[in-house]
Image (cartoon, rainbow over all chains, first blue to last red; front, side):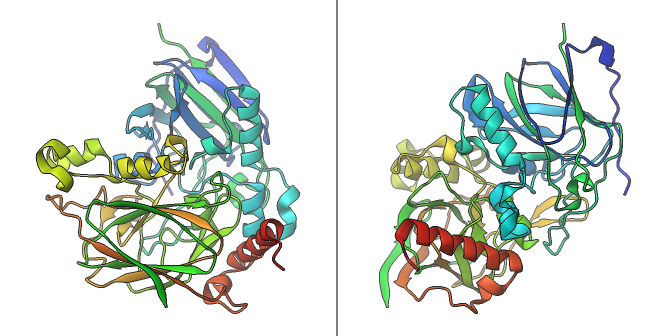
Amino acid sequence: MSFRAVESDLDPRAAVLDVTLPAGRGWTHELAPGDLFRIVDLEGNQAVDTLFFNSKNLEERYSATETIRGQKNIYLTAGTALMSSEGRPLLTIVADTCGRHDTLGGACSAESNQVRYEIGKKYMHSCRDSFLLALARYGRGMTKRDLPANINFFMNVPVTPKGELTFADGVSGAGRYVEMRAETDVLVLISNCPQLNNPCNAYNPTPVRLLVWRRG
Amino acid sequence: MTTHKETLRGGQAWSRRLRRNQHLAIEDLEGRACVSALFYNARDPLERYNMPDTLKAQFTAFLTTGRVLFSDMGRVLCSIVADDCGWHDTISGMGDATAGRARFGEGSYQKLRNDFHRNASDNFLVELGKHGLGKRDVVANVNFFARVGVDDAGGLSWVAGNSRRGATIQLRFEMDTLVVLSNTPHPLDPAPEYRPPAVNLAIWEGPPAASDDPCRLSRPENVRGFALTEAYLAEVEGTP
């Protein structure tokens, strides 16, 4: 499958933040309006479960359904406005060398792993656990109530015209990235996915690189 | 057998606690309804309908007979035991006031009194507010009787004529569930006039899901979802 790659000319040496997030870890970060935020799939086929909030009004958060309906397409790529529950763009994807990102597959949890794979899988690490820990550490009273349907960057969840939903092999590869511009004050919440039961991480969860550039 | 009957007028919001083993039928009286819906564990509304978990557990992008609605805790809130419509949307969200104004014009209460243009987003907030819930509790919803197609490139399109006069969906509740409904136009329905049709609701008591229930057995994921639900009920109700 081939997609149109849209590259960015930003220089990582000019980034104000440049960190590596290992698989299985959660992360929060606040972006200012105009900030450019890049996620790099360092080793390839790594799902990065992500939510965004208006950091000045945490009740306004990323909405998968508003985003899908706003662009009349289920896949996210360059040009996609990542819409909030209030119908406003939180960020816009400005560069994408992967070409397709999912927002229907949700995050893995201990409980959904039990349903999907085996009752005995409850012990396995999951994105929701990483989200919950990161939100608790962030310290503004956010809980499971603040975990709506998320984005899975670098994940491929095709829907067929007959309405079947499948988890396909990743469309990403080592070094591919997605970059977005914050349209308002944004809280980023990430779980670098630890899922080992399906191909979303090619059965080998790996680190991702997170960069922020500040304009002006 | 029916213990409660009610007609929801076009535009109307509704919420009610449904007990385990109660059935809820929703009937499209004119064949072009959209009933947007949210579902919460009545004991602990922090547990709610989860669109991604429902879809990925059943490898589907829509809802119909034999499928179940999963909560975010791996449990089955309700099962679709009958459906003569065939496709119910859960990926394209809800209408709101801004989109409604753009499509149908102003439609204010001041001008239209109780025929004013209500929308699912506002209706949900009103009903959720009655249960101490609010914006943080609004998640990806179900749109009963609506069909939105997805093409090979991921493009969404409204499918006209999905429902028909008298089409009915029947839900069986597998745990005590707070149901919130909004009988308001689907945000992708291109119909230019605001005139959501009435729908009939009927509630009755039924037997629990049998060991060979088709919704339970439709997928191994559902078998495990029912097992987790029954374990939870044993925990909170002390049932065997």
